[in-house]
Image (cartoon, rainbow, N blue to C red; front, side, top):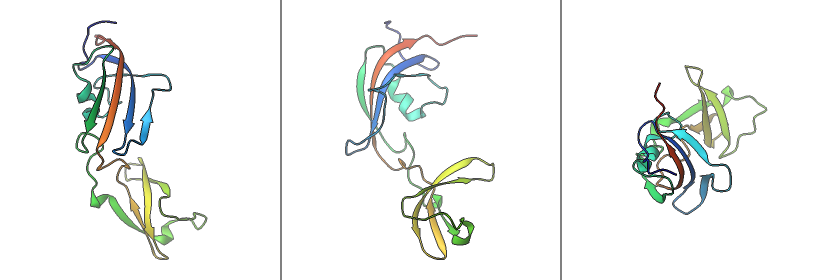
Length: 149
């Protein structure tokens, strides 16, 4: 262990848990292998990375991540109405069903069925954690210097 602190470009190995306001765990590595990433590489949302800056090996903290620093606020423009005829007849629609769609750039987007009738299907393309305040618990295992080329 070193006294090196987490900063842009440092390689960090940690355990983490992301929990909802009610304590339900969304994701956790505490019972698995720890996660390793380089600060700024895009593997962790910037709002989560910000909370880690300045921590060193051995630190254990709990942070509250606002929607703005996490998965953003819910956006009503991300709820789309699609003609029921656009869906394969073998798809059994039900509220909460997650379906995969492709956007104009052929990027896969998950959407959740929120409502439907015989003519239309309302799909929510907001991230499931959008608009949620999250608890982010971390245990820093190791911090390594930034790799220079």
